[in-house]
Amino acid sequence: MEARDREGWGTRSGFILAAIGSAVGLGNMWRFPYVTAENGGAAFVFFYILMVLLVGVPVMLAEFTIGRRTRLSPIGAMLKAGGRAWMPLGYLFVATGFLILSYYSVIAGWTMRYTLEAALGGFSTTPAEYFSAASEGTSAVIYHLAFMGITIAVVAGGIKMGIERASLVLMPLLFLLVMGLAIWAIFLPGAEAGYSFYLRPNPQRLFSLETLGAAAGQAFFSLSLGMGAMLTYASYLSKQEDLPSAGVTIAGSDFLVAFLAGMVVFPVIFALGLSDEIGESTIGALFISLPRAFTAMGDGGRIIGLIFFSALFVGALTSGISLLEVVVSSLIDTWQLPRATAALGAGLVITLIGVPSAYSTNVLAIFDQVAGNLFLVFGAFALTIFVGWRMDYPVTELQQGFRSEGLLRGWHFTLKFFVPIILAVVLYQVGKDTTLVLYQVVKDILALVF
Ligand code: PFF
Image (cartoon, rainbow, N blue to C red; front, side, top):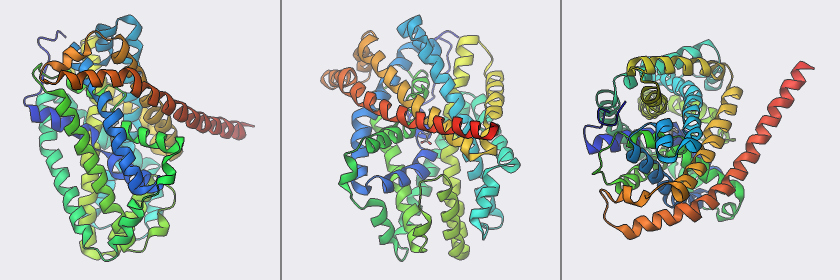
């Protein structure tokens, strides 16, 4: 498709809300609170903010720069901006989108099931058993199918009529829900114990590679960076857009929702004396201890639970949409497929790839480690090198819509030197973690076979 007849956002706020929609999702509402509590509380929050500002925002602007310069989806964009040598990076982005959405949709399916459950009859009185039944097996597959169905329908609707319209309604709704919940949580008896568990400053933990890895991994996943989602959304923009301000707004909103989610989760769990259940940062904690707490609060708790899981579902949906859009826009640009065919075709393949994750949370965890951690960090690293060292005049691209050349030069300098060094360290750490996980898998498989 030529850039001339390419679709585009209807309004500036449409783009910003859709990008916030991509960023705010499961990563904010279940991952951030636990990662923070495990890695040093308030000290980690401070460290995480630095990471978002000094690494996350620069990388986001790098994606915006390529997207808006080329006005193409990742594969075509990398070819146009960098030549054949950089095209594989575009393919990696699309592959990462495929893989992340395949398991993300399974977790999103659980949130749908919990939302419906809260609406129809209340949560189970045996949440741990309920979660193991809900998270693996045929019912997980059915909800995974349902979530993919909704995601495909929105993406098939296009940029303005599908993604922008959905974000304009859903994102303000999500903010209101999370904000309302956080205010409500202040008045819970025993809330302070929850806040202090969440935010208890423990600066010692900061000086370790693990914490650096945790903060960076969380920042990339949460800001949807390293797989071309922000690149793709920026490719639908006009040249007047002030991208640096948009980047700061998106990152700030993403952080705010993540932070507020913690201000809900921990007071609720502590108010009900369920802190022993937090234990490991497993995916299940949110789906087991929170419903238990909501049930213990009676009918009011059920309504609060309904609001919580609805917000989680809304966040997951707008993020799932952006993951699918990376794949679909590439099919449209590179192979000239009609949008509806591309959305349905890619959606079906992704749904199939997700089925093993719906049958086993162990498989899901492996996908998350490889695609959600390793590929994102690697993608961001390669992208930084490209924009820092190889791309022609990236600063000029951002100057359209933003005046301060000094700040932009600072940004480019950061991309050349600071960000790649940090990312190389993080990549080493994430690579080590992934090798350990894969090594364990191979050992388990061998043990089964022999
Ligand atoms: N940012 C999303 C979240 O925090 O849940 C997940 C995500 C969406 C990651 C889109 C990557 C992406 F491209």
